[in-house]
Image: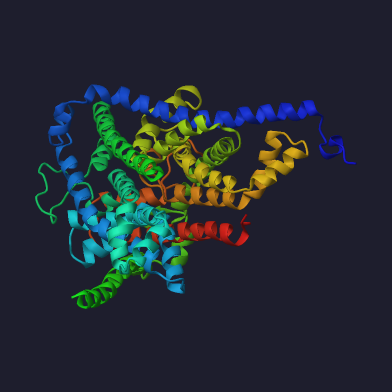
Length: 293
Length: 299
C-alpha cells in the first residue's frame, strides 16, 4: 500500500506552510492589480479635479491653459463615433449573421474565422497605417473624418463580430425550429426570431466596440496628425481631432498646468467610458434575467 | 397570393444571404488591405535601402543627417519595454488566474473580475499619463535618482499592469476548463490546495497559459501611446531600463505627427517599420493559436 509519506516527499507541516506562502503570493498579485488601478484613479482625480469646469468642456484649445478646453475634440469624437457606428453596425451584424446562420463548414468559413481572430490581435497603429495608405492617399479622402471613421470601423469590427456571434449562438435552436415549423423562411426566422432575442447581446458588443474606439489614439494620429482645431467639423470631409489626441497633446507639454488639463480631460474620458460599460453590463444582466423567466 | 409571397422571399433570401456574405468578406479584405498597403508603401523604401541594411543596421537616424536606416535600435527599445512588461504581467497575471480559478469564492470573483475589466478598458493614453506623472517621479524619489524623465522602466511596469487582465482572463479560461475529476483525484490522494493548483491544474492548462503569455507579449509589442508618452523618442541600443529609448510603434507616431511630405523616403520608413511590426505580431498570434489547437489537450 502506498502511504502518503511515499507520495509526498515533504512533511505535512512544510507542505501546509508552502500552501500558505503561495496563497499569500496569489492574493498579493490580486492586490497589486487593484492597488495599481486605485493609485491610477486617485492620481488622475487629484490632478484633474481642480481643472474640471465648464470652460474645459466648452472652450477651444488654447496656448493659455486657463482658457483651454476640449470643445473641438469632444465634437470630433462625437462625429467620429457616429460615423464609425454607421459603418460598423451593419457590416459587423451582417458578418455575424452570415457566420452563425448561413455559413456551412468549409475551408472559406474556417479562413474567415481564423482571419477575424487574427485581426483582433493586429496592433492598432497598423490599422492607422492601413487607413493612411488606403483611405487618406489612394482613395483620396484626405485627413478627413470619413477616413478616420472607416479606419476605426475596421479596427473594431472583430470585436463587434465576435460579440454578435456569441449573442446569436445563444438563441436556443428550439426557437428557430418552432418558427420553421410554422413555415417561416430562413430570413424570416433571422429577422423575427433570432435578431430580437439576440439584440441585447449584440447591443452590448456594439457598446464595448465603440468604447474601445473612443479611447483609441494611435490610429487616429496616423490619419489626422496633430491639428490645432479651433472650429467644429461640419461635414465628414473636414479635418478633425479627438479627445484622447487632445489629452496626449497636453500630456506631452512640460508645464504642470497642461498636465492638470490632461488629467481633467482623462476624467471626462473615463466617465464617458465607465458609463458606457455600465450600460453594457446593465443590458447584459437585464437580458440574462429575462431569459430566466 | 401566398405562392407569390413565397417566391419573392426565396429570391429575397438569396440576395440577403449574399449581402451577409459580403459583410463577412470585409474581414478578409481588411487583411489583404493591410498586407498590400504596407508592402506597396514599404516598397518605395526598400528600393532605396536594402532589406539587409534595414534589418542589421545599428543606427536609426532617418530624419537627421547623416541618415542611417538600421532598425535594430527601435527593435531593441521595443524588446526592452516588452521584457519589463512581461516580467510584471506574466507572474501577476498567472497568479491572479490561479487565485480566481482555484481559491476565490464567488463573492470575491464578483468584485475582482469587474476591476480587471476596468483595468483592461482604460485607454492607453491614460496609462501613459500615469507612467509619466506618477511612476517615474516615484521611482526617481525612492529607488533610482539617475532615472531619466522618459525611460523604458516606467513604461514597461505600467504596460505590465495593463496586460495583466488579458493574461489572467485567458489563463483562467484555460484553468476553468480543466475537468473537476483531475482535481478530485489529486485531493483524494491527499494533495493540498496549492499542490492541486500548481502540479495538476497548471500543467493541465499549460497550453492555454502559454498562449495567454504569447498573446500578452504580442499586445505589449504593438502597444503605442503608453511608450510614446513615457518611454521617450531616442532610438538607442541599450539595455539600461533607466534610459530613454524609442519603440517601433512610438517612431511611427513621432513621424506621423511631423510634417514629413507624403511619398518621401523618410515618410515611407513608417511603412517599413509598420511592416516589421505587423510581421512580428502576426507570427506571435499564429504561434499562440497553434499552441492551443495543436499542442493543447481538449478535455
